[in-house]
Image (tube, rainbow, N blue to C red):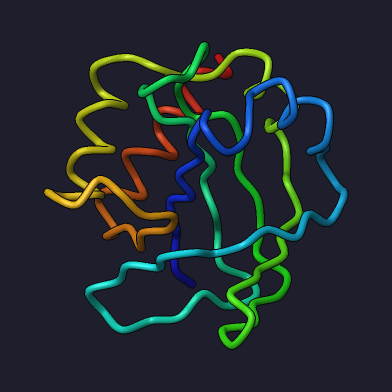
Amino acid sequence: MAVWLYQMSAEGYSIEEYRAEVWEGEIVKWPTGSVRTDSGNKVAPGDVVILVFVRTGAKEPGICGWGIVTNYKDEKELFSFRPTHPSDYLKMNPIWDDDVSDLLNSIRGPMKQGTMWEMSGDQAKGMKKKIHGWMK
């Protein structure tokens, strides 16, 4: 199982649209765009996806949800996922601080433009720790 960062830009999809359209337990189908991986893994059902609005242009940047990949079609550059708890909470209270900013920079590296990045084990642990800590 891989863990992926899905980067959303306020230029293409606003936080308000995300809040209105994405709900825990419902299947969401989105474009994958550029998928970056050092391991050669492809997005696959059962993988975890962590959704983040980047700071540039966003009213409320930060981690705003996560879910489980349910389908991936490489030839169409589409994937489906089911948002899971606490996504509905996170979209109303995105996690943004220096730790999240540093994690994003380590995941994306020098190439900040893109849509999806595979996370290393330590990066995934760091993101999950931020989400779990936010819920306490």
